[in-house]
Image (tube, rainbow, N blue to C red; front, side, top):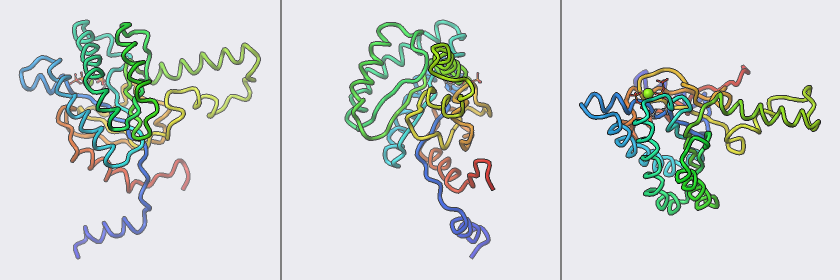
Length: 248
Ligand code: IPE
Ligand code: IPE
Ligand code: MG
């Protein structure tokens, strides 16, 4: 038996496999993928739809309970308006074409982020898509659009301040739970694994509070090249991590 085989067996003996319930993905690198092919950035965003659909199928097949995809950050609004408008059009288009499939596959769709920025037609479509799938009991799919981790924390702070002003919350009673339950996805299992593509090694104001103890996996590809094999590698990486949460 080779040393590597022995190591694999030992790993399985000593480490209970982690249960993977919630995966979050930072889908980065569409623009550079397109540039490398002499194409416009928007072509990269369009090419990024296929791995989104594949990842949803992969999550369903592998019984992952929650998949959260970072599609557009609060800060992405500072990009040239043509790119921002094209991305909003693409979002609306994908909702129109995919909502039937999501419903059929028992997926519950939710959009997290500040919706005030979206056009009325996009907001209406988001509401319609969410209510159409709200009773589904399979995968919960969160799309983070115009989402920022700081925005999420600020909207929670505003609610806390109001409660304090109304006298229904004593500031000395504010704790971890007070904040956690006001953040996006507070009703869902906590994020176990964050995957980032795009050859950047940062969080870029994605979930901040919610990933305090998540495992982080950086995939060396641009998002349009993400596939099931890479998703599987990220899970293999995750399942044998020793998660200590500050303990020993
Ligand atoms: C990720 O790809 C998608 C969005 C942020 C909307 P990018 O558009 O950031 O692509 P790169 O990082 O410039 O290659
Ligand atoms: C993060 O990618 C946002 C999304 C993938 C939606 P960015 O391209 O915005 O991140 P930075 O600017 O490289 O940090
Ligand atoms: Mg980027």
